[in-house]
Length: 541
Image (cartoon, rainbow, N blue to C red):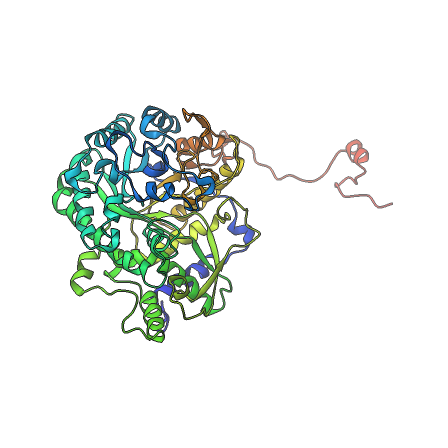
């Protein structure tokens, strides 16, 4: 039972620590078992990262097209997504890979500017629509469920020209685009996600300014955009709920992201609270309004509000919702979609007050343990997967969870990518523990990613793919890695069952079998040869 003086959010972290304060050897033990029979195994991708054909067949430019075409974009090797994996022209190759993997689902995103070059429904591009129809039809014919993300960061440039997500008109424009997608593809698509990783969209696009539209406003920009995203998501959810759900019978959510936050000192309350704050500022920022009460987590409201007051601001930098807006936003997701890759060690810190910053508002420091296996982007800490899934269950209730992204980036894995096999093996196993041992309602897992692709600021230097792509070849040939074969094996087994040779054999001996107590004794010649006494004891002298 939670003591009255402990915040509910902190209590969730505390319970995780109490439950899982086991020795390292026990934490890392491998668990054998399988997932539910209808578990949804899949892989993920996104439009800008794989499609290429950036201006083909009437497609309009996106903010990522313009960003990568601008000198000084900070993308490694000045790479662009102009061609990427050229999936727009290699649809059959992509479908063949998916069939070979034996996945049950494929998560991809629709390029808003390929369907509507100006972002407005009046600018419909039928050839772009045809591409997605052919992709969806090919998936359905292969018994692969389409999981569609409506917005994966590639806003039409024409909409950025009128202010992008800072313009309130974007909410209705996004709703119109989503409405069209539901109407056009919803007879075959039964799993929708409105936004991908809005935390990163808000911070990297409007806080640090590393991503387009490159707005550097770390103290207020992310909160403004997050506010708009929540309103836009809720609007689209209600459109689907009111116009399409009864006939199409699909589900709708959004993909949220975080690393697991492990307190540096579990016995220090300030570190435990700091770990919770990290989760609230990354995941709870969007999950708390949607899955709890329509409003931001208390940790965010208090920290941002208090620091805003100390900065002599008239109001909090974190916007507030009206009661009507809270009611409209609450419960606008049917399932919980999670992207997660690594873990962080977190401790409390008191950062500078000015200039204001979303990162400083959290009042913590985070780091990776150097003992964790290193990768090109994050260090691997698979045990964090189980703890994070349990935290979500504790925080938001027993809601169905789908892992919509999980994978590892390597710089030069070749095709025998044993490091990637180890990563997926251990992370999936921790997810299996959460499902089997902890009762987490886990319904699916999608590996990131189907194939090597354009990895944002890393360009093509970091490889996440189960399939290798030769970006030096104009035809972009794909080659299955060892990890692809391993993942197919996991899918075929629906998890990690105990190998047949290790199974315990159950049965009974024949009727009349004689049971006798074994008495340690031996015949004189055998005892003599073994240097033992008649009773089997060692001789002395």
